[in-house]
Amino acid sequence: MWLGIIRIWTGLFLMGGSIGSLSAQVDSAQLSPAEIIDKVDQMLRGDSSQGRVEMAVVTRRWKRNVTMEIWSEGTEKALIKVLQPKKEAGTTTLKVGSDMWNYLPKIDRTIRVPTSMMMGSWMGSHFTNDDLVKESRLIRDYEIEIVYEGEREGVEVYEFLLTPHPKAPVVWGKMLYQVRKKDLMPIRAEYYDENEELKRTLTFSEYREMGGRLVPTKSRMVPQDKPEEYTEMIYHELRFDIPIPQGTFSLSSLRR
Image (cartoon, rainbow, N blue to C red; front, side, top):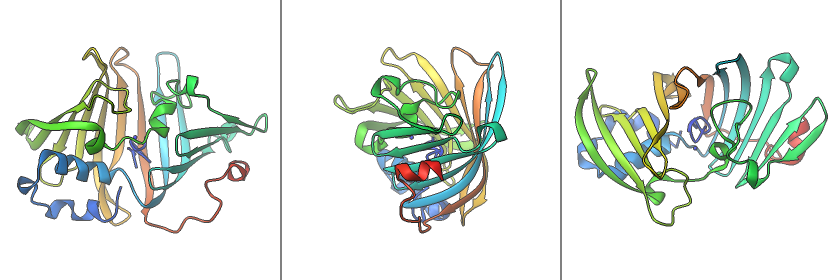
């Protein structure tokens, strides 16, 4: 993002202030579990950002690749415009607060996404409309504890259990989150339903400097019930804390 995409990739998931460039200097041993997760969470946010991302969707029946340009402002606003393939160019999603609209250039219509469709697939991917609009902040909505600290596959990591507070507006029964100790880069997130059944897994990789900070430039979402399927996000460009033109996050911008 990331990430909410955002936050997963905008979320994507989507990197805050100078946290990314400073993360390697943080002495995580002096931080509480909530403070560590908050730093990771802030990496997937930003005062403003602009980027170009490629989304690859693989299902049992078909494959598709979509190139998009993304603008975001804080956690409240995001604009996502399809650049390629040509037949889908101009298809645009606008998110403002908890509201979301799609513009479909083939029929020249702007459609507001109703609440009943929030758990539906976004653009045929394994992300939902709700992934784009939710505004959860992990330290606000979850109780956080370290459940493992040590080596996994040759890398020193922290593993966290995130359990939602009773009245938190979240859809997951719990999350397991793994980050690298040396720089707090996210590695893996597992999402469980209220019955503690694993529903999907998000992995991060290909860490490199982009926009002046270290970020994971690739993320992959895999549904647990269809392990051969996935949606992958690859960032090719990413800039942070940039001025956003007035009117970018408006209904009129959908048709530009």
